[in-house]
Every structure is written in structure tokens, then in C-alpha cells.
Length: 92
Image (cartoon, one colour):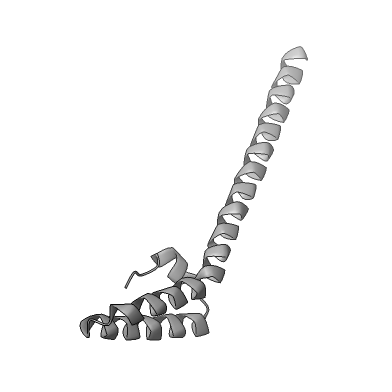
């Protein structure tokens, strides 16, 4: 069984996480019984189950990028204002 990343697991809802853990347990049992034909079905269910959490992770990344862009724009504006203020002080 392939686990999803810790980041994705951290974004699963309680119900999704409970279902994920149950499916992993079933998958491990099937592996010990060498029932790999059924393991593939369980893995597919896990892959479908984690899709919403993957989308939440992507959205967090996009939000972080937007926040960074906003921060850099504010920083550039403040630096420009500071430079203008320093020029004004030098002119007086």
C-alpha cells in the first residue's frame, strides 16, 4: 500500500482520515494474505479519497504565492516611499 504524504494527510477531514486509515488497514491485511488483486482496488479507493485533500494543499500553495506576491509589492512600495522621503529630506 502506498501512503499519501504527511501534508495531504494533515488536510484530510476527520471522516476522510478515518476512512483512509481503515482502507490502509484493509490493504495491509490483503497484502499479508497475498491478495494483490484486491489491493489494487483498495489503493484506487484511497487515491480517490485523497483527491479533495490534494486540492486543498494546492489551494494553500496558491494562497501562499498570492500572499508572497502581495508582501513583495508592499515591500517595494514602502522602499520607494522611503527613498522618496529621503530625497525630500536631502532637498530641504
